[in-house]
Image 1 (cartoon, one colour):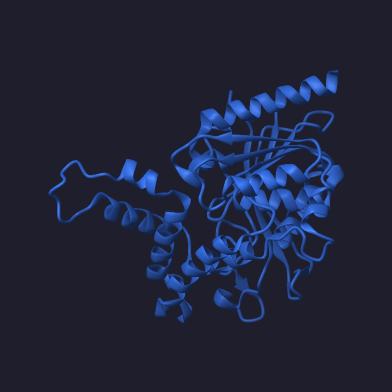
Image 2 (cartoon, one colour; image 1 turned 60 degrees about the vertical axis):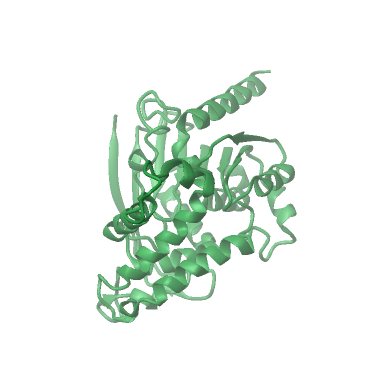
Length: 347
């Protein structure tokens, strides 16, 4: 299996949707497998908020040998999103005008800016057709926006636990996390460890939206009902917060949640519905029954407005995180979708 990690350096000015521009950008990306002679076997994976460009790390149930996305059959591409901290240009990158990291001075970005970086990478890789694009959560926002911008590029589109526009409910979760980061006085001090306590608190808030009461009551229940301290739920929140602080930073988190807030496929278009109707790819829309961040009604709305789409649900007690954990259900749903497509194309 061929697995490569690369950095693409784009040395030309990169204009941003909201009016600023970056003097140039770097795009970190992974590829697995190789293009076939027809260049028709491309799988493009869009990752969510704090993931990286290596889906074998965070999606091992879907990507790998003998998995639904198999590098022996497919050429798999995943790029780190603009503003992140895993190799693509972001707040810890050096601002050439000052010689120091951008930190909070990094310009505001949108989901559409992320798609513009993908277009640069796609052309660099010589990809003119994408067999399947897939994304969950914020990754679904990217996949949806790209399929609207370039409808002829994609044969299949798979959207998991996502939305056509960010709801006030989800924006409120994001703002609560940013308030936690901003309450950490070190966030504005301009050093790489700044904002760590705020980021830990933000992660604690996020976890409540990624799961739900049922999931916590299942996984963090106490065997000893007489306990008065050292609760499992407390340890879990602390552990997950510390874990994120070790691998991420407060500036990227703050920036990317604001970019997520901008997601609305109807912005500067006639309407959300008309934007969705531009999509030509055969589309699979998957909701999660217990997801409180992106409830199934939002997924059904997408399905109802995309021609040639099907809707399926994952039954899981684990809420929004189900798109990252329910590998068996998701693999079966995607396999069935692929079989339907094969039948339609050969009929």
